[in-house]
Length: 588
Image (tube, rainbow, N blue to C red; front, side, top):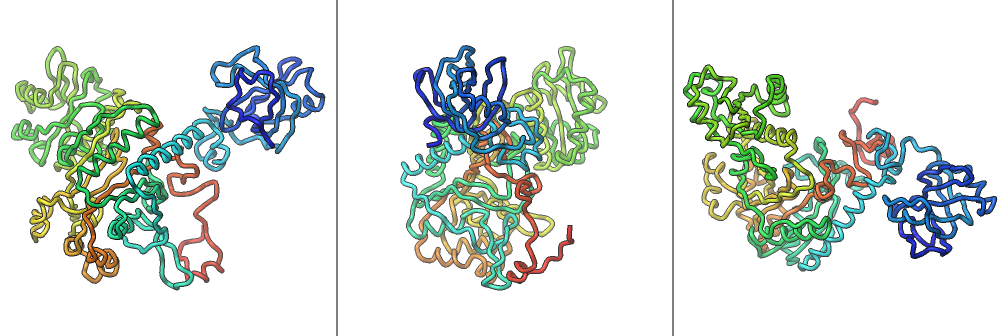
């Protein structure tokens, strides 16, 4: 056998035993008549010792080793003279009696250390080397543990893990599909699933009342730190449930994961916050409630005072930043430029300092001290706080304030990644109106049911009535990130047809794209609902990180490329002809 033990398991209890290890050379160093080799595998590091008692052949091989050589090492476990309390094997070392090079290695292009000297692009090109580093190893181990615990919990609750197809029909109503040409059906294409949405609903029609799948999904969309073109969902569906049944079961799953994976307790009953409250108070449908600094509307307090910027807008809102009254003029100017960036979109920023010597603002000439005091009271500011004010169309201004609130939370150190504040956001609008296309879009997806009490509004022909319809939907939010979301689904054919009608999808298009599920609903579809968690995001947040790349073995970069494989790439003319394809893209 190649090894009797791993590089992470030997302790003083094995002193005197002859063992065989296998792994990679982390480091080799010579110290007088002795030399030492740190041998690494995924379980840990063990120190090997070469001295005058070792066979001559062992000393000769040891003298020629380089970093990342693959070795087989045999020797006797001994107590270390100079112990290393930083590693579990730090009390012992192996005095070598045999050493074999299993594979020599070129010098790696960056150091295989916790803090590497390689840049992100270089490490991505040699991802198989980057994966040898402890931070990535620990991330993938956490991902494995999470998947294991998810399966344990859902199996215990009676869920069946059922696989659904990857080659499906394109239904471009949400994000862009990745499409796959069919050689056997010229001119026709499959799509890769953005989610198994329709399949899991069909499984409910089929009577499999508790389904789950840890499943790969695909979306051709612009990327961010928490997005990849292919990603993994914990996808779930249940029959004969109402909203509270789903929320209770899956906050139970999250409670189990927090406790079993990172030993953190979360509340027995999580906050339920309406979408409208989230937007009004936090400027976001995924609020970070680890800190206060809520948004307050002050429109009525500041309009009609002669300041045209406020008088000409629908909404004026403010946040109170604790302890920031000492901000200098330079810092305020920098913050003003920050909110003018395209990512925020504000035209300017008004500030009010609440100091021990009184209240001062950047718009003093328009407002009396009494006016400013009323604003300070309304936003619950205290002495030493800084009030920041933005304005505009209501939802846009609230969103800008929400982004500013998070930035100030970052600057003040209020967003500790190891503090967890989960909640459910509920009662979303069912529909979003788009002025450019003059039509409604589904805020979640077209299979989301309206709240039962809003069915009458849902069948109205008035735009203002349809805008008031709430979805029977919910998102699980943690620390300002949406980790998952779902809804109670439409399960009646006539209601589903009405949804397509409201979305401006003709009966012919609806039948072509979704006829299979409308027909299925006619054969006794049960009431059902479910949700999906972004598994990569859950793993990253449990690991205290914002980016998901370290929690995916082979991720893409920020333009969707795999720089290790150099993909995507062109295919040759023979393949193009077999697939009946022609490219109009310029040759690079």
